[in-house]
Image (cartoon, rainbow, N blue to C red; front, top):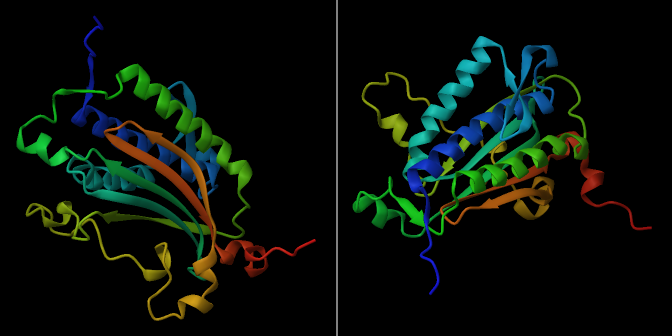
Length: 243
């Protein structure tokens, strides 16, 4: 007789781990893509992998606010995508996008209605297994810098979130918040070019996506993709010459 399968982590535990992972990744991405001087970061370790954390109070505060504002969307299974877009300071054009896509357990609504998000799930990873998954993800993230072209000139960044229901993030409806944390994204900052453009003739439509890493927990899945934009690469790289 086979042994009964032991439950792994609960939905809430995995959601909390993914939220923390997004915060760690955001700090490290700003370091790896040289948005701020390396001297403004300190080296840490997460999941036994070297990572970097900003020491600048305003940057830290911004990242903390971003993560705390998107956390309810992850807990509710609503966050579909978080995009970190890097833009030129002078022209405002996107140079590259790092895109985190999330997918959720199909029975999430049943769990929430049954007050089961705190109960360990059969088939979900345990803490050690999830840690190994996220460790592999961070190793891939750290290696990404060597695969991308350098962003020339001064760059800034924005964090964009997209929800599954296309509604405003729930944190914007908090009555205790006088200024909503989220504002509508600029059309150029998202994956799709503005609707007013001729999509067939729009070069941005053809900017390739590089799949970097995916982690499938069976409860919350997360995938990282990168898109290098023509403002950085040039149009000629979209259609390399045939030898």
